[in-house]
Image (cartoon, rainbow, N blue to C red; front, side):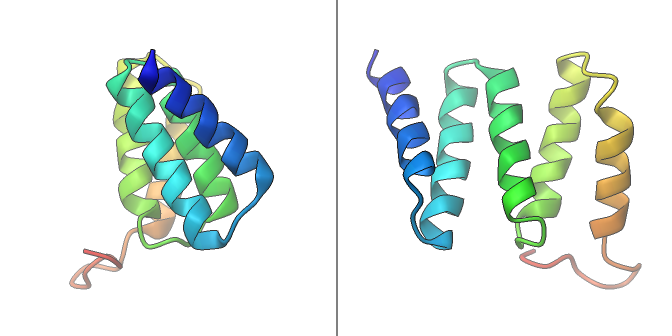
Length: 101
C-alpha cells in the first residue's frame, strides 16, 4: 500500500545521496515506518545502516538501545553482544547526561 511505497521512495532517496541532515531524517523515518508496518528486521537493518553512517550522532545511544530490545524480540542472539559493547562505549560516565537527553 501507500506506506510500503513510502519505504521504497525513502530507500531510493537514500541511494541518491542528500545532505547529512536529510539522510539522518530519511534513515530514522524509514525505520519508524518499517516498525509501523511490522517489518522489525528491516527496521533493525535500517537503524544499523544509520549507525554505520553516523556513529557519533546524538541519537546513536538511543538507537542502539532500541536495536538491543529488538534483537531480543527477534531472537537475533548473534547481534546482542555487539550491541551491548556499542551501548557501553557510548554511555556517558556516571553523573553525566547522555548527549541529546
